[in-house]
Amino acid sequence: MSSLGDAASDLERVADRVPAIARDDLLRARVRAAFPTLHARFARLYGDHPDAFEHLTAVVELAATSWGERPQPLRDLDARREADPDWYASERMLGGVCYVDRYAGTLTGLRERIPYLSELGLTYLHLMPLFECPEGNSDGGYAVSSYRRVDPTLGTMAELADLAAELRGAGISLVVDFIFNHTSNEHEWARKAVAGEPGYEDFYLIFPDRTMPDAYERTTREIFPDDHAGSFVQLPDGRWIWATFHHFQWDLNYANPAVFAAMAGEMLFLANQGVEVLRMDAVAFIWKRLGTACESLPEAHLLLQAFNALLRIAAPSVIFKSEAIVHPDEVIEYISPGECQISYNPLQMALTWEALATRDGRMLQQALDRRHALPDGTAWVNYVRSHDDIGWTFADEDAAEFGIDGYAHRRFLNDFYVGRFPGSFARGAAFQENPRTGDARVAGTTASLAGIELGDDGGEDRVVLAHAIALSTGGIPLLYLGDEVAQLNDYSYRDDPALSGDSRWANRPWYPADAYASRFDEATPAGRVFARLSRLIDVRRRTPEFAGNELVPFHAHRDEVVGFQRPAIDGSGAVLVLANVGDHPVGIDAVTFSGLDPAAHDLVADREVGLATGLELSAHGVLWLRVRPA
Ligand code: GLC
Ligand code: GLC
Image (cartoon, rainbow, N blue to C red; front, top):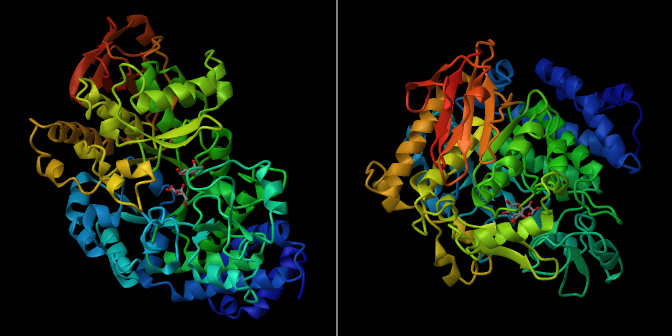
């Protein structure tokens, strides 16, 4: 047993115990570079722990062993990424996401779809959770029973590693979830913890009676109230265990350094299978403290930074994507080169839908104006919708600047998107309506939410507009595969008892074979949407201004118009993006363009556009204009 001293002498002590460090120059350099960070995070997280030094040594040893086992092609990838650290901010990046079973049946089936993914231009593929999980409801695989075994109905870990290699060969980075806040109740650690096996008792948060659960629940939020009230569920023996999400997803106790070490082992294992991006699931929830909301506590960041430091040693090309669907002030805190290099952009996503419902782009414009900037070396993942519900995570204080009451506005948006609001074009489903708090979120595919399911005239335009925004604001645009052929909600989940309680399955359809078959037939919605999105994707890839994250607001002085410029690196000009979220054409005055050379080029239509007399934007229209200063 020993505690931590200063970083320099602790590094000497660790090096004495981990002989690989002396033997391998590259490893030694990386350990030296990452150790101060790792040490400092350990000191703050576990400094009071009697075995802090042993745990720190153990994780460095784990990283050293993992590096020793890292396959040569992945070491080559590490070197390539080191030479091109901004790879994920390139204008050529395009992400896709799908469920293996729903999109392709199995991992083998997915390999057969690689030609299509390449045709689409993907460089990033997020496969939804594919690990061993409980039968029946497993929260779509977000209840993991083993991080080292693939769900046998999908394939094997060896097949996953082969798939990763094949994708890499096609220029596509494999992304999988790192579901590290909780495991399933069937995970070996969970079974041992409940049985009180030495070494595992403190892996989870288990309490003998309601005293502590009641105390915590005074300040925690209910995430899945349809499943259970509060943050705890009762075990058959009467004790209570922390379960933020479903009753079968048990939160790990990261105050225990053995939990950190165990999860680090799983993370490094996945990195060596060829996973290039880990989607860090539910990051906000990983640290708990009595009297707080137990969300986004400072220790959550320290943990992520410590995990990140281990990757810099053992698998330096791997990056983290943060999944923090929380207040925008909190979302941004997870994003830095030393923590999560990329992050979902839930605010832009939600406000795109907000703008389409209200036909008023001001909140989205405000978010682009003041909440888009990121630290160097990081990028947004910009998406139109995900496998999850849409939550209205805008800041109430931002809305208040327009005289909008956040609570009432969320109610309106929920009513609008579940089709309860008169005249709504949307066909969504309510998710987790909480009568006690009035809270709810919305489920639905892009096409159904945008009006195609209802047959609204603007439906296809809205699908294109929403994607045009995600494709032009920088970072990695992420498509939910099937949305590019306008797939509609899938209501079949209602007949499956394991899924019927979770309306998010409406927006997780099975592979839309018919829509794909007609993707070149412009007499169909699938064909028209596919043609228009393909064109946008193609233009984006050839537009260097769309790389990186720099964005300069452009105010068209029309409430329904969202505008911004993406400057060229050489200062020669910019791409001006103008989007009309309204249902009617809108004119923009010539004076608005007075700072620009009147000769602009419409990149999507590939034609010259004059700005001297102003411009008309069609209903739900988007323009990508290459402009120069006057
Ligand atoms: C993430 C996933 C969501 C899941 C939850 C619990 O938020 O996106 O689908 O229910 O984590 O793991
Ligand atoms: C909550 C969580 C978020 C998760 C979602 C799943 O909003 O904050 O992390 O994705 O639930 O529906």
